[in-house]
Image (tube, rainbow, N blue to C red):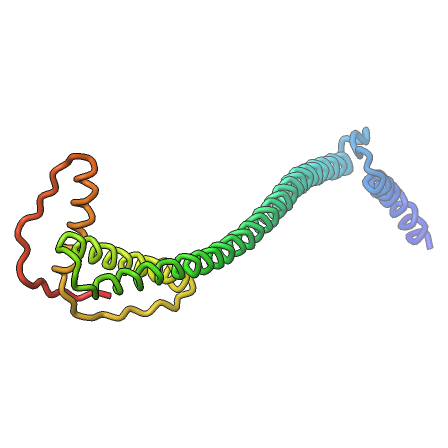
Length: 219
C-alpha cells in the first residue's frame, strides 16, 4: 500500500511540470527557463527551439504566398489588358475589312458603269471610221489617219476590256486565253501614235526596221 502511495506522489511530481510545458506550447509561449536546470529545462529549450523554427517557417511561407499572390494578380491584370487590346484590334481589323470590301465593291460597280459609258461612243467612232475607210476617193494621208483612228479605237476597247478584267482578277475568275499573234502590227500602231505626239512637240520619233513578222504568244 505504501508503494502505491509513493508511486502516485512521484508520478504527480513528474507529470505536472510536463503538463505545464504542454500548456505553454499550446498557448504559443516560451517554455524556458524552468529554473530547474535539469532534463526538464533541456526539454523546455527544445520545445522553444522547435516553436521558433515552426514560427519562422510559417512567416516565410506566408511571405512567399503573399508575394506570389501579388505577382499572379499583376499577371492576371496584364493578361486582361492584353485580351482587351486584342479584342479592340480584332474589331478594328473587322471594321477595316468591311470597309475595304465595300470600297472594292463600289470600285467594281464604277468600273463596270464607266466601261459601259465609254463603249457606246467608242463603238460609234469605230463604226464611222470603218465606213469612211470603205470610200475609195480618199487620199493616202486621210486613209492612214482613219486607220490610226480605227486602230486606236480598237486598242482603247481592248483597254476597257482589260479594266473589266481587273474585277475578274479580284474575284479569281479571270481565265487566260493564250494564242499566237504577230507583234508587228502592234509595234507599227504604237509607233504611229507616238510619232504623232512627237510631231506635235517637234520631236523626232525613230523606229528601226521591224521584221516582216514577229510571232509571239500571249493573251
